[in-house]
Image (tube, rainbow, N blue to C red; front, side, top):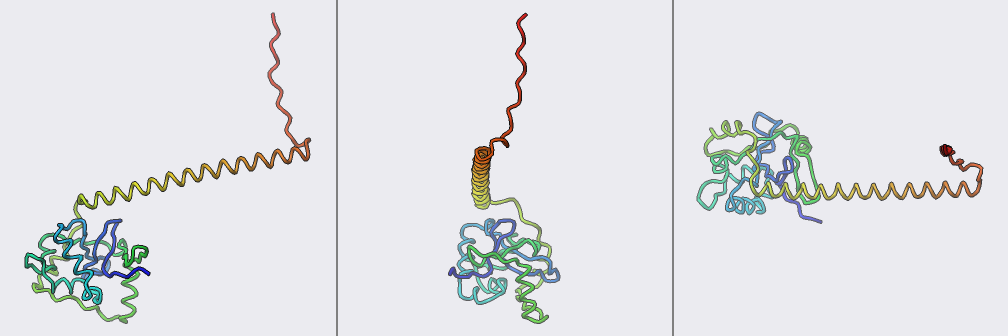
Length: 210
């Protein structure tokens, strides 16, 4: 059974990490980190944190990142905000991918967690600078696809086109087989009862020579 990894998700088929399952004051939105927009160093360091026991034991990624530093010394959560790498997206459009084969709607996950907590407000991270919450709430939709994401999307698109072609070929083969089966049954019926076979339509009369 594949191991489960928390915090990983996709939004419009773009890979991402869920920083906040719900934006403070905006439960219909979530805050994401689009992994394709990260620099190579940031990406590797962030994924290393995601894979850590601390992150996998904590349901709040922001809290974990507020206590970790990038190699340049900056606190991860603050650096992601300063570098404009935090994206706001509708919760209804985000899908968690805890394993390569499993997809869970973030909206369903939030609902389940809310039920378990029996109406209690989930703990929120204490940012070093509380003014960042207001800034985070103003995060906009993502920028243009990065080269890495564009390559991933191209690969997905090619795969979908191949599947479509295979489906069309399968449909054509099935149709041909069905037509052949129908003709075979029709000929068998005529052999058993020749009177049922349609008589050939009379051709046009030959023109008489003048």
